[in-house]
Image 1 (cartoon, rainbow, N blue to C red):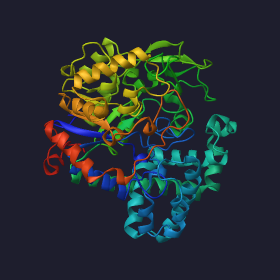
Image 2 (image 1 turned 180 degrees about the vertical axis):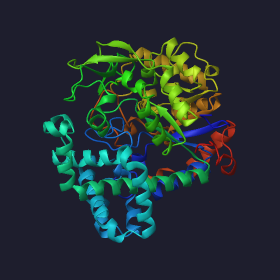
Image 3 (image 1 turned 90 degrees about the horizontal axis):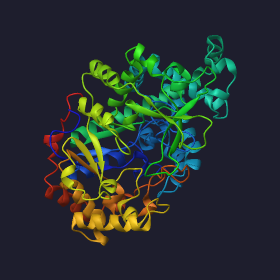
Image 4 (image 1 turned 135 degrees about the vertical axis):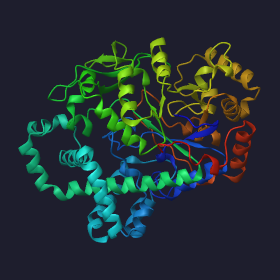
Length: 518
């Protein structure tokens, strides 16, 4: 079963948005405290965005690897306790902003600190930790870790330029050229592996803490990989690219609610015939790795498995393209045969066809209902939100409920449409404009959906200043951070009462074991 057996309440907060002292949310003490607070509030599900390493633009949906963890999320206090860095050395991060992530300042400083920790690991790490690192290498090195580490060092050597711009012999992974580079960069390559191990060890500790608190971890998987990624460089056959890394068509979606020009993502498309030939083994490995991070996995842009929007690579927008057939049932049959379960939630927003719905339903995969979209429909009834789905007030791509209700900056809705939506939501909730965020949360909680989720910003009652991402833009996204003092005892009591009133939430002792595969 994908979703928990009883109706649960959830929160969406990306790890980067957690509070903390070192410039970005981390997977240590503050993450554990957040889980404890969720448990106290009777929130049983924590949803976060993809946790892969990010690059230019800082988007978690354009990771450098489908298997690696984002080293920027590593808990610095945990490294201090291990003796791998000193508190004095960590002071370089103390003066970074607390209210938002300043990636430009954070990345070089934290990267230098992590490299210092990796340098010291062979000498200062305890024997049990070194043994765990050896186990980590044995399990992952040949599958993805070595290729990723090699790719990251090569990328650094080329001024962080994308791999299609490297020397031809490295673009084509000429065995002699790669071997020569490996010999000269062995220590740096090993350091990347150590840093990945530190992420993995800290994350598994966090997952154990979540299980003990009765909180399910709800992860997120982008359907596509970035062209500039270890996946594309090391396994180009999974993509429709030529030997130089060029694609004739790229991914996106046609015009929709978020953008009148559509969304031109630019990702290379999958060579689905090649995946079918080896029974989707790369996807099986990807899903297996993701389930080591999370109990439930949302797959972004689920409709791409039924058909995908292929945009000519020379186009400046996604307005013009063609729908092409995806792998359909075969990929889900292969994953279920290999893994025995499908812990998947489908992101099935936007223009969804009957064929997409049928594919999801055949495999009993829950979908999503976002109330910011649903309440704008004429005669919407909350009874339309059925059990086998996840209901949201909004997602990371939406404005906060207050911002949306007031009319977001750059909103594509007309003034009349915004006003009509306001009337609809007030009629549906029976609430008031000054309590709209709580009223919409209560509406989601009242639904039959097995899980009802609100972004943390809605629980906190924040406006557009706290929006995490605006689709179709590339600036000032993924930066917002919560402050610990915002989670006041009064707020926690109010949230707990809302959840209990809705009949959601169970004691941690009863909810700790949700999924046999977790």
